[in-house]
Amino acid sequence: MDAPDPGRPALLDALAEALRARGLRLSTAESCTGGLIAAACTEQPGSSDWFDRGVVSYSNAAKTELLGVPADLIEAEGAVSEPVARAMAEGVLQRSAADLALAVTGIAGPGGARPGKPVGTVWLAWAWRVAGTPCSAALRLQLPGDRRAVREATRQEALVRALDWAHAQPRPSGEGGGTAPAHATAVVPRPEAPVALLAGRFTAVEQAVWAEALQAELATLDPPWRLVSDPAQGPAEAIRLAFVANPPPGVLAGLPALAAVQSLWAGVDRLLADPSLPAGLPLARMVDPAMSAAMAETALWAVLALQRGFFDYAAQQRAAQWRPLPQRRADETTVLLLGLGQMGRAVACALAPLGHRLLGWRRSAEAPRPAGLPPGLRLQPGEAGLRAALAEADLVLNLLPLTPATQGFFDAARLAQMRPGAALIHLARGAQLVEPDLLAALDTGRLRHAVLDVFATEPLPGDHPFWRHPRVTVLPHVAALTDPRSAARIAAANAQALAEGRPLAHRVDRDRGY
Ligand code: NAP
Ligand code: GLV
Image (cartoon, rainbow, N blue to C red; front, side, top):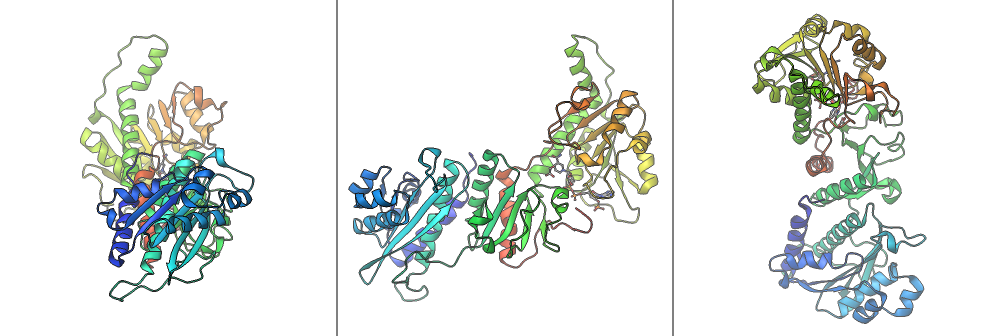
């Protein structure tokens, strides 16, 4: 991912500050990260004050030659092992003027994988001296994602632990800090970081992108969080928050410390349909201006294409037909918006400057006008208001959440209330549309066209009539994708809220269902 890494400066600034304030120096020994940690440290302004030496040792021979790791130890334990990680850390501590040595050895890519040591197996080790005697500590990680994600997460983990070690050292004046444990063995010298789980129906690439984006944001929190992609890595008892994207049912059951769920999707209908979702567990949904902007773009495209006949021209092109159609003006086109929430408002605001006549439906006449709607949008309250608006609108654009009240919303009766020759733009959830009823309305020509982004079954089966229907335009559920580049920060802000005991932003009302 090319997105900037907001975790890097914050974490490194903090580490530099902590080491400098105590007059301490750091050295590193890296194999799987290939010098990434040392490079990040030396890029910090003034790092010569606190960074001493970075040794890169991809090969076993280099571990022996540059760090003094005994060849027979590597032979016996394997290069990715606790004893070798410790020996690397102790080796660089002895060979530099460092007070703390940080070592990593791991398997970042498929070429290095071994039985019992899959990609993402990493050993981190630290070495330091207490009263002149070297001490070390080590930790095994199992990190998700591809080479890049593993390297990045290793870097973050290593720096976070170096920072914790530094904070535990006394300042020269004697104030603050503590002393490092003299006989730390396999124990990590820090209180455990809060842990978040990432779970969803992701491709491997999506998983890696989300893991990288979230880990970078979580590392900037106070305290930093650790991200895992499998409850077994947690451990399960430590997982406090789950970031989810429609995970398979049951994933969130059996996590005793789980205190909240942050959906990476705007709609949470599938999550709420999981019977194993613990009752009363606070749930936040994704609200991201970037996502609303994407939805507004999709809506603008569909509205303009329908108003101006661009879908008809696409069909004419396939038939090599040159036939100009009447040019309909925006102010001759009435658009009815169903759902006036984050998405509906963004769409209304994007359409308003173009001059379409805008109608919006809400259930109650008593409720105040929702904030953020363009002044020209006319509200149509209640069932009677909906009927009148359906009869008037040329284009009906659906952005309602899927709830029991909106399940099967567009059935034969509702479609029959639409103005003859009108078109449907359906961007919310497949289960709101009775597909055979829409096909019937399109086949008779009563409805002119349908732009469909969501379906009863997704992916849309290859033999579904929508694929080849001349009056249907199909999108593969992409009207507004969550963008990790902006959404990771929004999700991480709720981790911070949870850590501080503040209410979550964008909490779902589980009784209402959205
Ligand atoms: P939101 O902010 O929660 O807004 C929901 C709106 O729907 C509110 O105005 C709400 O009215 C209204 N509403 C709910 N139930 C209703 C009912 N029975 N009758 C009339 N109005 C009702 O949600 P959002 O962020 O705008 O997202 C809406 C939906 O878009 C999501 O649930 C998701 O399904 C879909 N979505 C699709 C994509 C995609 O790529 N296709 C992307 C993002 C979202 P009140 O103000 O009265 O509560
Ligand atoms: C997409 O459909 C979402 O709900 O985010």
